Image (cartoon, rainbow, N blue to C red):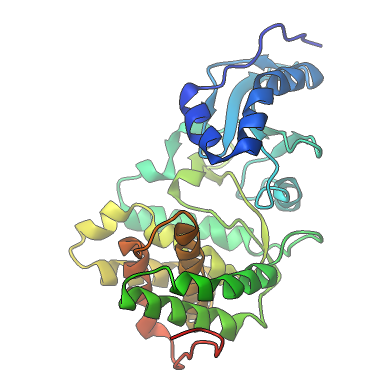
Length: 320
């Protein structure tokens, strides 16, 4: 087995952005160089290039003992990522990166190496990109969720609990009304949360070119629920392409129609769960100190609101 003598490199940009979140994050960052070195030893890996990072994880290209290229992924265990290995095992590489090894205690993963230099966001034609992403979503959501994953029912309940407080933070009356509308949509659907295995964050930068298939998904944050809860990242990503059409609402609805058709979803339910994702994003923004509605989220919600057949009424617990 290879013995690592050098601590792995942690980019300054990752330290600066991730360490700003709190003491727990800073403590994890302090352990990260030795943690990475320990897994190079444990799994017999050799570094094969500089480390890179996303919003919440560090990845290092490596070679296994037999010369096979792979990626060592280090991430802090959080509620959103705790089920990643279970989800990857359930998908077993069908439309998504393969899990080669995993450490339950730290959440460290050894993954099949894809082409990080060619994300789906680099595709020129927006319709083609949406169809590729929709095809992957259809495959991923066809799999029943394994036991033990966090469930959309719990996520929906937590959102409804937090929404009334957010109403007092948003300054714009139109923003507050949108929160009420989104919460009403979630309340209407919460009793039927679904049982499919959801990726939860499948946008264009979480799809990479590969040798095994033309495109494969990465970075799941698995959730058991309704596939309608999967659509928003594909609707508000590559927003410049939406704006460039000159008709934002029409472009959003076109993406939405393509995705719901490919996934075989009932559109009214998909509208409701997409409004739930808007609500989730707004609640996170409020927790970060924002008092105005994000215009992109408002535009997506506005484009879809006419799609629901039944009028929605906010829960009685919501202030006016």
